[in-house]
Length: 190
Image (cartoon, rainbow, N blue to C red; front, side, top):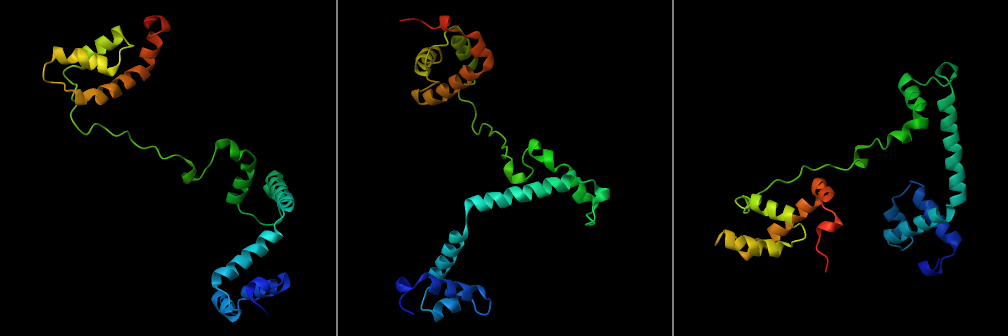
């Protein structure tokens, strides 16, 4: 045999068959043929891929599905294979199991508890005023409301609270009650 690049398909098939024999480990077979184990695994994968035919696989899957459906339709008393009651229950619900959704715990999204506030609310004293201003003029931006808030509470609300106020406005705007109460006519037209 020559180098791995010169080997014919038959030679590669013999090496792969030898690696599946179980008499030696894959590493030993690879060393015997002056290959790295990685190359031998590549040969094995190439052989598997060559044998895959999507049409044949689909036909086999459909045949197995029909067989399972036939088992599900057969009453337990008529069975000669001695299946136990839990299997019978499983097969009886097999036709409609997909309607209930996935049954594995990994298929369900993990619902995380919403993270609470980590720091005290910096707008706690002015929330009522801000809410009233927002409801009266919902088109106002966070910077406009902050500019209006600063003279009302001198020294309490610096410019660095702008992002906090913008987040608060976003929550208020997404509130369904507020969204239903506002309409296009409440916004100024330019």
